[in-house]
Length: 186
Image (cartoon, rainbow, N blue to C red; front, side, top):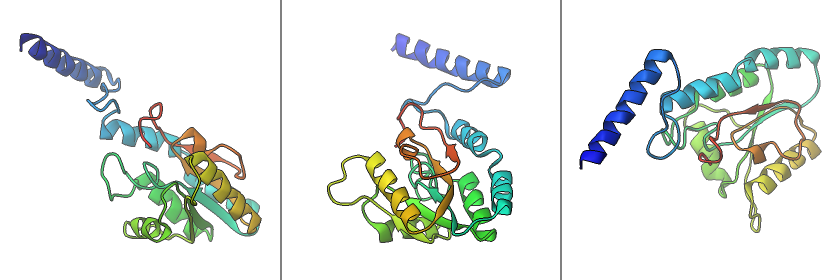
């Protein structure tokens, strides 16, 4: 019991020291940073996104689109299930205001459920592409979805995701990589 209390006191002391010095607080018991740290990291990842959209749309093109992942990208799945990730929602809403399509590439298996989860929190989604039977890796699904969107004539000007596999294979102009903390957020 004494060692447990000493450990908890040390953890609290580290957290207080981190706050006092501006350093990141230690990871939670699940191994991922706090919600506030995650939000700050997401904000940093999306920094400049609105300006990029404005500039890129100004360059012109047809069927401009952004692609977003859902879990721990468009939605705060780990931290606040059922809530939109504010920075990503703002990015997607701004894209729509500029006439850019909002497309989804997700390893979820039910497109209708995926669309509903997004529209319920404010996303205006043009198309949803999800895992097909037999696809064993999210990376394969995301690549296939972007290829299908490109084949349909979309120019994917931005791709937003949180896992390295969300960016494998190309078919997009600029990536916005949110944190996954070494794979701890799916």
